[in-house]
Amino acid sequence: MADRKPMAFMSYAHIDDRLNRGYLTEFCECLSGEVCLHLGEEFPIFMDRKDIKWGDSWKKRIEESIDGTTFLIPIISPGFFKSQNCRNELNLFLERERELERDDLILPIYLIDTPLLNDKIKKNQDKLAQTIASRQYADWRGLRFEDLGTGAVRRELSKLAAHIRNALDSMPPSSRDHEPAVETPAPVHHETRPYIDASENKVEERPKPEMPTVVVDQWHRGDYTTISQAIKEADPGSRILVHSGIYDEGLILDKPLCIVGDGNLGDVVIRAEGKDAILFKAARGRVENLVLQQIGGGNFYGVDIQQGLLEIEGCDITSNSLSCVAIHGKAFPKLRGNKIHDGESAGIFVYENGQGLIEDNEIFGNANAGISIKEAGNPTVRRNRIHDGKASGIFIYENGQGLIEDNDIFGNTLTGIEIKKAGNPTVRGNRINKNAYNAVYIHDKGAGIIEKNDLRDNKQGAWDISRDSKNLVKRFGNQE
Image (cartoon, rainbow, N blue to C red):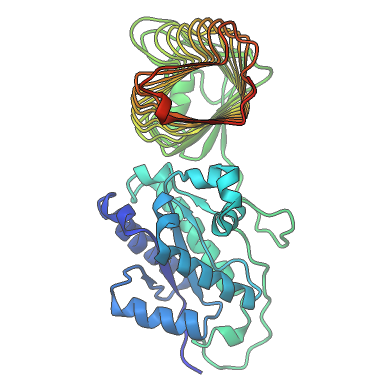
């Protein structure tokens, strides 16, 4: 039987590498090296379809005799699903994986937010999109903005490498023909482990290392008396537990940390004047159970998310200066279950390619729109209550996009949703009622898909669409 060294193929849309200045080429080299460290042997990853090594190896390994030592690494992006080469490679590999009765040989890397995976209707019409959405994947949407040599990225690469090692360990000896044929005791085969989140049915789980925790207490009963000092001294990946008190400081998160307020919401208040309450510029982070107040003193946000993936959950956020939350610079945060209110500008401002998931929040009483989206901002806004603002509920303009789905938008001083100047969202399944003007106001060449919304009971009716926007708007299934 032919010698079979472990290896992988990277399946990707070439535009994703070219327009990211060779990022995927560098990523491939780093991952190959990290797997080599975990295996103690070379682990080539082929990524160039024009290379004869790709053609020969792909044909032999995939079409003829694929086994459990060969992996596929699909790089998930909008371009991936539009590439017939990528789709063919994934289909072929899925067939071979089924033949082997394996489910751990495809390692998706989610590189760029892909609307197809967020749109239930479109996803249900695409079997490959359904398959990818149902799999464990490595979320690289925030990490791709980080240097590949940073500690956060190297830790994620190590997780991927460990998954490959564990998958190889779970194969019977017949599939590892490169091993010496010597008589040894029967190996213990471990159940394959996912490389992101543990599955409910997995056994023999390796114990997860405990997240180191430091305590902030103004009574000197912890490790530090200020949160800023704790951030400065804590190791990346640490948890900072903050005891009750009012902390007059602005926080700069420039490393992966989890900051948690102890007790009930309101026990821990972070109050910042002349700065952002939180300025986030790391790859990952989490903030929960805090009151975050920007109390003026210049042009600042309650939370300014400049990059990466910050999770904000169960917080109360206000701003006496600019918006309560700003998302920009291709950041992809997740805001869940927060109260975002009484901002001097918008509740949430998404701009300059900001993305993210905004769901299950209470957004109210802001001076401008509850959510403003512009300049290729493209968030998913789902199951929020956006109400009693002093302008529109949601304002999308200047090439803003977004999926606006299943929200309650009511009681706003102007319209429920306003779209203009090449704004082009998908607005689906929302309840837009009891606003002082129209449910939806589209003008100045605004566009969008407006479907299956409840647009009843607004003072000036369901629609106001200007002549230059009518042909740019698709409407169907709305209740008026």
